[in-house]
Image 1 (cartoon, rainbow, N blue to C red):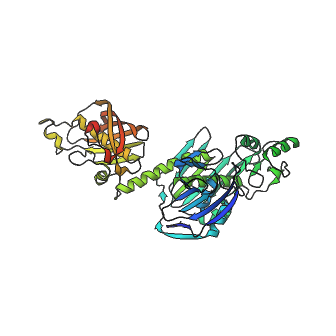
Image 2: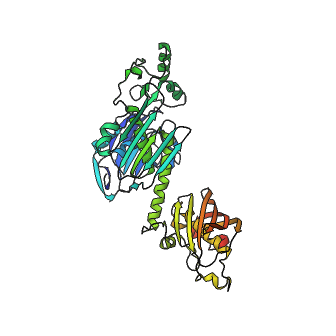
Image 3: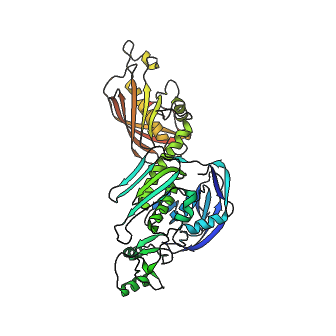
Length: 477
């Protein structure tokens, strides 16, 4: 796999009709600078707004993936993104003068051919690979979907589909080398649907640009000739239509025996591009579709964001430690004598966190609480939980360096056992609800596996410049 980022050398355009909207669109690929990423641009709208190709902006997954930002939309982005990922392009602008890119022949090959004609340019910036170092799994039992990412030092995809259709049967396919296999073995695989779906899809406002030249229609039921003509007329298909003896409408020949499975792999590649980083992983997918692909991409993107945040603050990798005390001093505004947490040992972005406080007789508060019978004040146990929760909060927002978590309420606080010098507090905080600037968490503190304190914490995330310093009741974290 490539070590450096790359873009294209020159702009190149293609035109055609969008599959679902039926609009005519001119698409232009344009070079982009290092670390720009993949972005769509609607040149037909005021100020030519851009939409980053990120799963955060997915709004629809009905027979295709739609992105939207501030009212600007782009439909059916998956084939283009598959071409870009397959050619290992990191930075590019995809300019459109309408809402949906041209479907061309229903595969990614026309985009691949255009990008190869534009040629590639290596850039003086390293690729930011997301290296999967632990198993990540997504399961939808209702749909029979199972997608898993496994550690490997390359990018590999394996897909299995089973529509319980005698013509299609159960199919599987695998891509093991982008350089050797993608262009000729996968990019030409075309989109497909079943005959029984066609009329329903049209009535749902989809496939307005679909025809027998840009999609494979699999015959899954017998229809009389007058019914076929009725459907064809409704869809605006003027060429003759017949039930193919090979199981495909009009006896259309497949480019590969397992072309539907290869196209599903292509869709998966395109949807996983929305993670926002090239992958080093083995992806195994059973019965994937756009909805499950996007759900899985969201899960992987969260892992990517978490790894970036950890890398930003934790310079030295330490076994069993996510953030050490040096990292915590970069994240939290607290200093002596009020930085109470010593390290973070587990962290799941926007979900949960585990901190550690080593309780020592040298802690300042033992001088007066209490002489001859040192006990850690309950309010400082709450503060330790709040600071741990602050790390969880502030690492999930944009520009965390400019934010503070101001704790607005503490509810149902309970102290079950005293905490003494020599104890090690394990501070577990779980996110309950989170809106744009308000979050609710539940925190527990343990010593030797025994619960010593717990509380419900609410916090408001504010700009640091506008905040007022406070203590536990209005705690900065």
